[in-house]
Image (tube, rainbow, N blue to C red; front, side, top):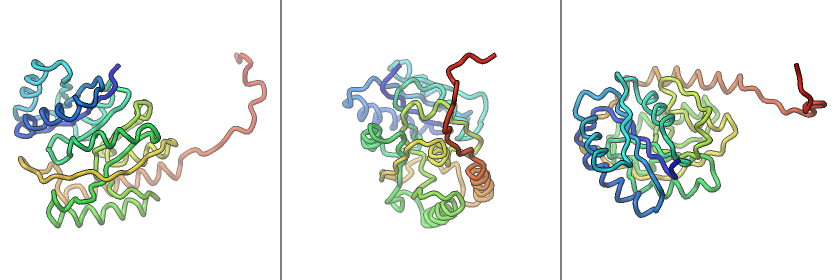
Length: 245
């Protein structure tokens, strides 16, 4: 068991990884926690897995979980959650747009909250106008249909108490709805501002239009799940301590 697990889904990030790992190490080591960094290679076609193996050879705190084929960000995130051994779990992107220096801030709230999700308040510093506009519209639609108040559901920079993840069931595309799924189970979720940095290498794995319809369908599924959620309290369980055949 570790104090902290950092879960990082990776897909074709060979240029970003050599910069991300030393920056992460520089943030985590002063915290004094026993930590591990779980890189989940989602079927990359570049040298990402080879680079992570090099990190592991030099530092046993690095782990590589490699999927047989590209399965998507939700699958990679789920595989990382299942592999994590920390009592706190942080998930972040590998593209350098999430700032590792925000990790202490996320962790500082886990003494009072079950999960903390990032809010890219200054997203304009990292994305073009079309992506910012589409994100703003998508967030409003998601909140209206799901009866939520999440400011930035597209931000996957999050921290959790381990117990939140034990029974979390994800489906493809549902990494966007983790805060909603946790709230449905009664967990307390806080949203806090985080930095959002410009992309330095590579291109976004998501386009504005190629995910709109899929995201809408996913949202309608989540709305259906919330509407069918069982809500009841047991008023009495007389004889509940007896052994039943």
